Length: 68
Image (cartoon, rainbow, N blue to C red; front, side, top):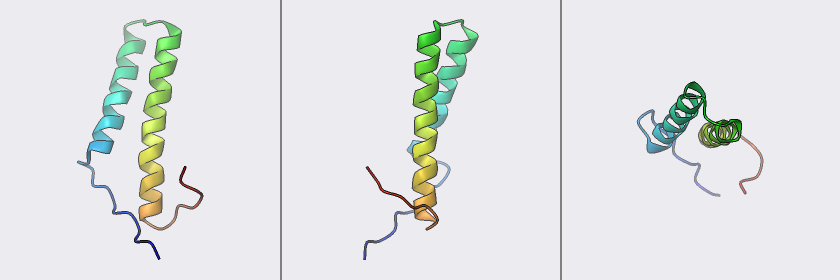
């Protein structure tokens, strides 16, 4: 049986990367960047936060599904 993944602590680089992506998204919105750029940044930030959340759920043993 495979060992479950380790739980990520709040100072883990994955969290920092997600927060930085969200900061870039908000900065682009505030600066009036083109809609396509803002949407791209939103999708990147959302994806990074979702990846951290999915990882944590698996680490706590409550996430299911397949890892692609």
